[in-house]
Image 1 (cartoon, rainbow, N blue to C red):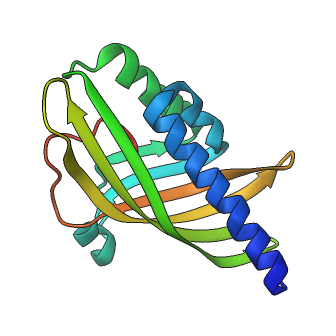
Image 2: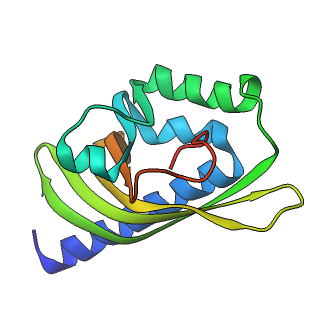
Length: 159
């Protein structure tokens, strides 16, 4: 892959990650559109990830479970009104080839409850496997690893 190709791919990934953040923050119903039908989505604490332990704070195996997570957030989970803001940075391509694209990024998530001060909710990194479907990049696997063992409150929204 040439330097030009790598730069174009990185720009394309940045656009994807920023659109992904916008979907989670502004219109959660669009979030599943970023995944393949057989996608794996997982949020895991750094200690569990580093030790290879299977326990995840959120696990969605397949797009159906991702859609179910959206329904849970919107219709069935009872929680205080909350605004989330996601930022992605340090997006790096670690592999680009026949099997798709492997990328990683760092993320920061802020949350604000109604009539409360904004707080830092989570910081971490993601390990992603993306494939192209009909000209669009989609996540086949997205593993979000948050630093530390705990987050303040509960993980309801995806990272």
